[in-house]
Length: 102
Image (cartoon, rainbow, N blue to C red; front, side):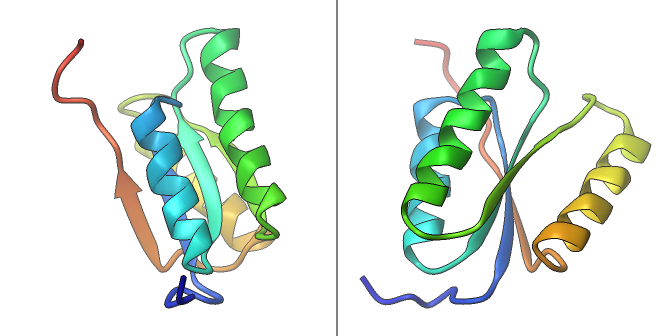
């Protein structure tokens, strides 16, 4: 797969779902460094975020997990500051929201 996003930093926000995982992995395969972000409600949800980041890391790309407080802009600003310190300035933010609960 061509690495069109080589050197880019992408924040992928979601719930740790399979769609969130798929988007993060596809962007990583395209060369991006990934910050996996979410607002976990419990330990299982937080573990899902870390699982996605570990899969990205296994592809050879840098990754990190950031947790957000839903609706808290200060939390989001702090998260972006942490991403910039660790991976570089975010080039793209992708939000993965489910539209159906199946």
